[in-house]
Structure formats: C-alpha cells, structure tokens
Image 1 (cartoon, rainbow, N blue to C red):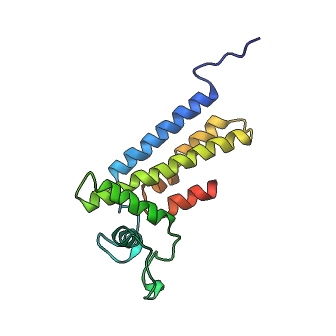
Image 2 (cartoon, rainbow, N blue to C red):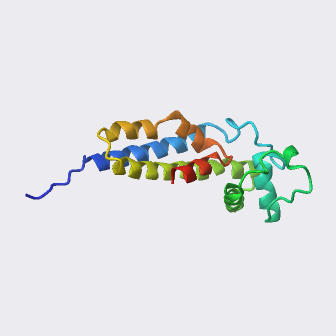
Length: 166
C-alpha cells in the first residue's frame, strides 16, 4: 500500500504556522520602533550601549579598545558577533537610505531572522523528541510573546538565544 501525502499533513501545517509566525514577527517590528523594548541601547551617534557598540564597529571597522573603564561603557563587554553582524547590516541598509535611524530600525529584520532560525531548530527538536501533540507545542513556541519581543530587540539577546538553541 502506497503512503499518500496530503496537503494537510502535520509537517505542512507546522510549516504554515511557522511561516505565519515569522510574518507576524516582521509585522510586530513594523508596529514597534527598535528602541521601544530596550533600556540600554544608548543613542544614535552614542559611544555607549548596544547602539554605541555597533556604531563604533560601523565607523571604525574594529572592535572597541578598552582604554577606558569598560564598566562605564555599557554593553561593550558582550561578545562581538551580533555587533559585527549589526554593523555590516547597517552599512548595507545605508545603501538604500540616508537615515541612520532607519538603518538601526532595519536591524529588527536581522533579529527576526535569528528568531526564524530558532523556529527551524525548534521544529527539528519537536520531531526528534517524538512528541505526541506537536502542533499544539508548535503553536505555543511560535506565538510565545517572548519570541515576539526577542524578534524586535536589537541587542545581542536574539543571537545568544539562537546559539543556545543550536
């Protein structure tokens, strides 16, 4: 007997839910500005906070030198991968706009991509664990409020979460 594949298989339904969740992450980012959830961003052209870290890398193409006390420069102690990616992202975004604010705003797309990749790994984990009610678990994972917030903050938390899930 041949195994029939249906359009409404469990995998197809889960993929559709995951894509819908990713679209909602992007819509959420469109509604909320990049500085809505963060308390330690710094500011545009700042030399402190998460934005200052990215700003320094974007301007100088180098990591910050700690000739000052790092305790006074918030976020400069974080691992640099997200900030390097963010600086490259902002530089790329500035090909399309002259507004630095829009460049930083577009970083929410990068963090949404991180959360989309988290969903891919969650999807794989659900099938590896052979959970009975996969669709219910998947709905919880995809539409968890934490996933929406993590997709919209431009600090390094989204990438840290992705690396943790991997």
